[in-house]
Amino acid sequence: MRIVLGVGGGIAAYKVASLLRLFTEAGHQVTVIPTEAATRFVGVATWEALSGNPVSNSVFDDVEKVNHVRLGHEANLIVVAPATADLLAKAATGQAGDLLTNTLLMAHGPVLFAPAMHTEMWQHAATRANVATLRERGVAVLEPASGRLTGADSGPGRLPDPEEIFEAAMALVTGAGRERPLAGRTVTISAGGTREALDPVRFLGNRSSGKQGAALAAAALAAGAEVRFLAAHMDVEPPAGVELVRVESALELREAALKAAVDSDVVIMAAAVADFRPAEVSDTKIKKVDGEDAPVVHLVRNPDILRELVEQRDAGGAQQLIVGFAAETGDEQGDVLEHAAAKLKRKGCDLLVVNHVGVGRVFGQDENSVVILSGRGAEPEQASGSKAEVAAAVIVRVASELPLVSPAP
Image (cartoon, helix red, strand yellow):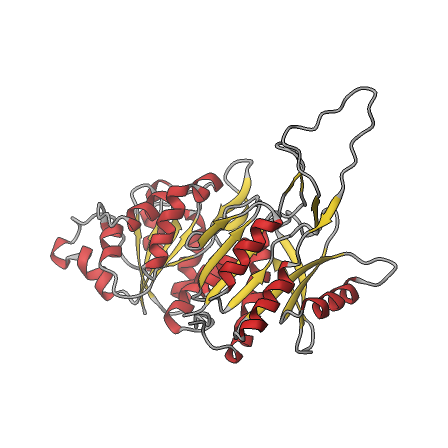
């Protein structure tokens, strides 16, 4: 297979040498096209030695071969790693200032971008819009990994491991593991933690970061779904390409979820929804006054959104898969799974993804471990690893349940 490997001008370029070796050892013919900036990180000699082919980033080298047209036409696959913010912008806007961007415009086969950049760059509205544009055109854009970046900072923006990029690239060509099982499906996902106002400044909240919900949205997008993303308070940005609805309170989430679910094939309620809210909300900041007792906050129950979604589906006779999330702790009344099984029965949803939570566990972390319980009585399924890996396992399970569900009209 003929592969064009574009290399962007980021420090992660050194990792792409390992990706190149994976391609060549698998028997593929690889032409490397680094940007001018990339050659300041890894020299042309390295790419030529590892690929066994001449390397250039100029449209004026070997003009008689018309490389700026030929390479894109002949390539069975184009992979760009690291895909910097600059490269994503140029690709999204159709610029053609060097050999790599010309080749991308001439691509006849699948294209895969593996982004790597600083967290703020990845989360910037311009980058997110560019990623959404590329995905809408059918280009595969991986989510960057989270972890230590070039300096002291950590966060999403690391280049995915070469092995992960290799597997995603091969799947694009062969279809293995990338059948896009949710193509043609609409998936609604809620994420983050609701905030219940006490006064104009204070609120009751929870520790949810929204990371797992964002990972679920990315996995659903990769599986071909159209994703509606209902975002309460989140510490991370939703993935590019979703239909985004911002909410704050449980009541706002309820309204958005019931509306979005009407024509959704799948509803995944991963948000951490407050069970209670203050009965009264002060119009002014509550102040402490010397000589007066602290105010007493009376709480009222919030609606059971998950249960209402099930009732709405059943009343309308819709074929729809509803997935709940449960953050549980054990107590003298039972362990985590016993509480979760009781919740699954009360809610009536099809699947319940169970977290064992606590201080320093799950909320805000990059790793997760869950058990997926089935309302149909199937054996519990465990998934653990990064939140992206857990999300992928949940989406695979969701897709496996969908043959019983016709696409929403």
